[in-house]
Amino acid sequence: MALASSSRTYGSLRAAGKWRAYVTGLLLALAWLGCAPARAAPDGVIRLVALGDSLTAGYNLPQAAAFPAVLEAALKARGHKVEIANAGVSGDTATGGLERLDWSVPDGTDGVILELGANDMLRGIDPAVTRRALDAIIARLKERKIPVLLAGMLAARNLGPDYARRFDAIYPELAKTHGLVLYPFFLDGVAGEARLQLPDGMHPSAEGVKVIVERILPTVESFLARIGERG
Image (cartoon, rainbow, N blue to C red; front, side, top):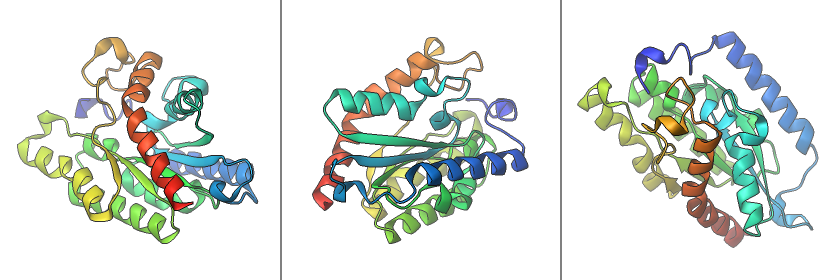
């Protein structure tokens, strides 16, 4: 995940990013318009939103091979009634996610898997800025009584030890502060594994997504249990 590659892979024009974010939010709102929260629904379906960047969106992959779809299928195979909306926008930063939060996470959402920050790191954004944006996202969701599973990220070591220390601390510290379910490193098992990545050496391939889902699955099941306890 080299910083020099960020403009080619994670980066996007700001205007294009905002347009994709608007379309994503509009589609989510139309799809779920009028839906009651899942724990009150007679079908008992838990409705999640995966809010993230290209790692969530499924960069250069069919939608069926993107993280939210593969995770949903895995959970259903284990007997969970769940729907996961893909609110990933390639190139998005934590601040970008905050800007589109209200329309990316519609009413009726029972939980959010929050995966943002990789682009902040790749662009060398001050970790304090990333922390503030993620904290604001979490706080706003808590105000709406929507639980959050926080998916962490680690800094590339070529950014230096001080940057890595400050960036890596964001996720466990926010999880502790807000009492969140934490998955420490979203790319665990995939980062540095060429056979599980696209040719850009940064984004997971379809096989890489399967590894991510396999590893995060127990944490997501714990998250679903926490949501169930609230019902």
